[in-house]
Amino acid sequence: MRDDSLPDAGNRPRSGADDSVANGNTALATPGVAIAARNVSKQFGHVHALRDASLTAHHGEIVALFGDNGAGKSTFLRILQGSHKPDNGEVIVDDQPVVMTSVRDAQRLGVDTVYQDLSLAPDLSVVDNMFLGDEILTGGAGGLLGILDRKEMEERTDAALRELSIALPSLTVPIRDLSGGQRQAVAVARSVMRSTTAVLLDEPTAALGARQSELVCDLMRRVADRGLGVVVVSHDLPRVLGLADRVVILWRGETVLDSPAADLTVPEVVATMVGYKKEQAS
Image 1 (spheres, rainbow, N blue to C red):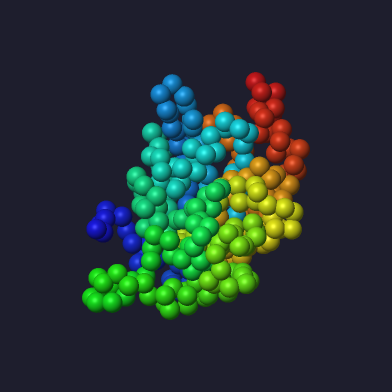
Image 2 (tube, rainbow, N blue to C red):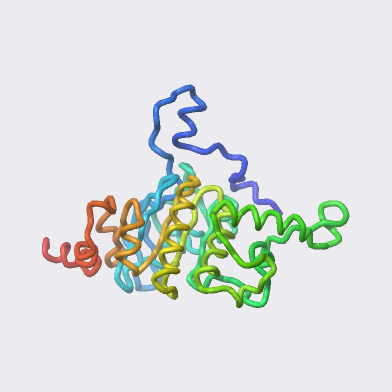
């Protein structure tokens, strides 16, 4: 059943630079906000997972979310993906304040997540995984007979992979027969195919070697170049720092740094993550 309380991402106008063209203004405008959380807090019993956390990712921008273990990164990501509702603060999607109570809410708003475990079915093919839970049906009115439209699914899968320059041996090969980097690429392509606003990535290079990690980072840049906002949570500081446009660092549930990535070094990021700068100032 359709939830009319949430706008349809596919029917909403894109914000930012596109608006300047629509209004006859040819000057470049600041890209609109793809996804943001402002001054959010979240408490579980006596545990304050987040106290005053903020992050903004604009269309076409990659934002790295860093923090030490227990800093609140996972809780923050779950708020952005609709799994948790913040106790205070607001979430913005495509320049509009929203209230999300589930991952499906986020997906209807054009936000999708690539999880650390990838959420892929190893025995199913690439095509079946691309449409897992969102299969295209044919036969009868509106696909009521429940027959999979494999031709349409294969065509859309091929188009999605080509758009991101992802090369695979076959669309029918089981996921288990792909390399770690190829599996990650399928998971990213699936999220991009579902998204119109932002893609969230949780430790996308954690289980990959150096070469495969570089391929995934190149893929993230191509995703941003398509105009989506990208938020990536990672412990791979040198690689992701070189990839990101901006860096947000959480420390004990608070945002303690929001800076252009080019202005930071790995030692500075580490010092802030462990609370050195904040404790020195106190």
